Length: 290
Image 1 (tube, rainbow, N blue to C red):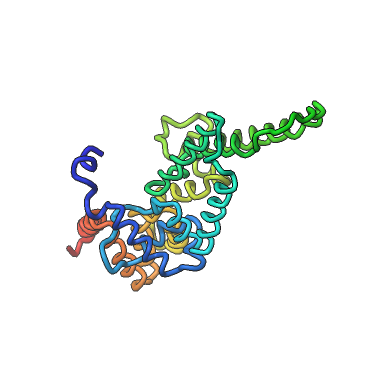
Image 2: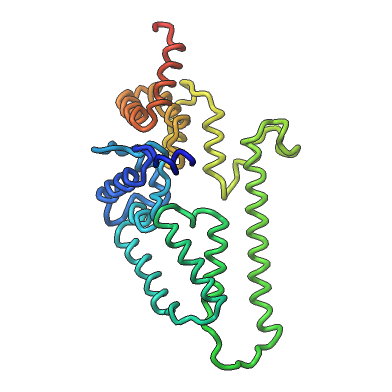
């Protein structure tokens, strides 16, 4: 961070390179986009004409561009235009209530931040954004309205609160058990200490994280090459990082899919040159003919 503040980001890490790559991706699928959550795969699988952003790119670091690359330009225009219309209709410049002005100010900061980063992908920012919208949604009362019946008004709120508590409790439970896969055995909770992978296979919220751990723990051989290849192809859309790419190349080679293995190795070399070099060194050490 200090290096970035003093000298700026390295050329391959700059926002200009990142946004240029995203614009090239948008040009390939301008109408429907690459699909929600597919930016990282699109970035990895595309061989750009110019400079390449060197990190795994799962967000465009600009909300309109991110919507355009994953959902298409029409959807991005509708979403951004619709939000802009709601803001204009609310006329925040006419607000006089200090609390409402503060809420508008927080929304403005988050939206401005969204042009350079991705705050709406973080829980604390989502919480603030949602609270501000909820606070601003009702118009200021113009007349004193009669209070509704106590039970009639309370029942929907209680039902919504109970539903929210149940959802949060399930998410916390599912996260807790799935996260055991990424801990050393001695650090796991006793109930999930042994046969952890088998016990969390039914995870719904974190299915991709479970499959990622399964791939990482699986050694590729001729007997399971087809299964590993299918799993690696799926996870390439979840997290196209070196450990997934290596499993995909190895399984494709064992299945005799040499063209696919070469194509993936080429993308691997361009996307992650240091990891590719380490992988080549490891392969050379494992190959007795070298």
